[in-house]
Image (tube, rainbow, N blue to C red):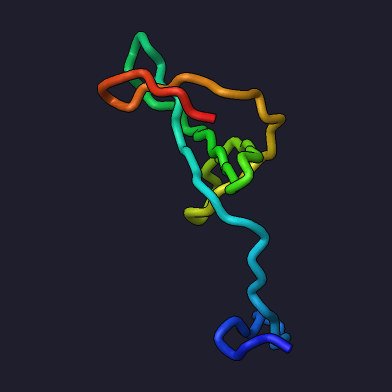
Length: 90
């Protein structure tokens, strides 16, 4: 049913197919204390599919170099600093 190049083997030895859900753009930004310039550990991740639907997550580092993604309600467009200018992102 699936072409060979999309098949993979799980750690449990089960054959699986990689099936695309959607595609699009992403935006990541961090929070910085404006008084100290110190970065917070949390990062915000916005996933925007080709139809413009956005999914929003907080990303927190956890032990072992892994990350925890916590879904958030999408709050709409916002402005972020890109190092030179304020930019509007979805």
